[in-house]
Image 1: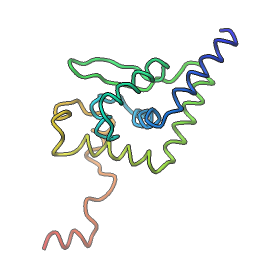
Image 2 (image 1 turned 90 degrees about the vertical axis):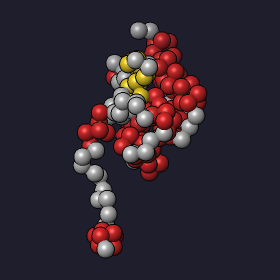
Image 3 (image 1 turned 180 degrees about the horizontal axis):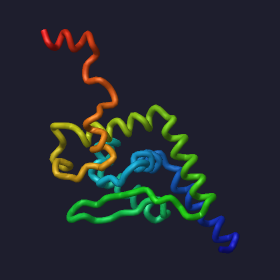
Image 4 (image 1 turned 60 degrees about the horizontal axis):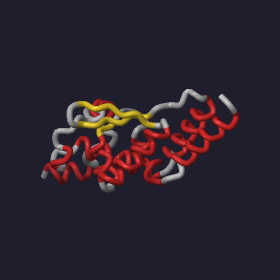
Length: 152
């Protein structure tokens, strides 16, 4: 690959990473593929906005998609180019250290595992990584004092 082509590819990668919504989407894709409908709910953004950013990420090669019936699933693609892969890996590590990004991921878990979900995602396939954790809550449902009050 020519130096000019490499520079163009790196420029495209940095442009893809230069948007807050796209960073939030990439952060949610860190573990598993996700149905498009969950992004809107977890990030509290409109479906057209999410779709536009997912299309941009697909064009840049960072995200892949597959159709399963009426559902579109998106997954993270780690670039083959070592420098691009290192930039993505470093970006994802940095994102995970941000409270806002962890809160987005927590929102995704809550949306996926909620009893009452919006009609738009009621029958959508849940991300497997989150479903596997459903049986082991990250936090206790009630603190000891709250549990005593609740049981009385």
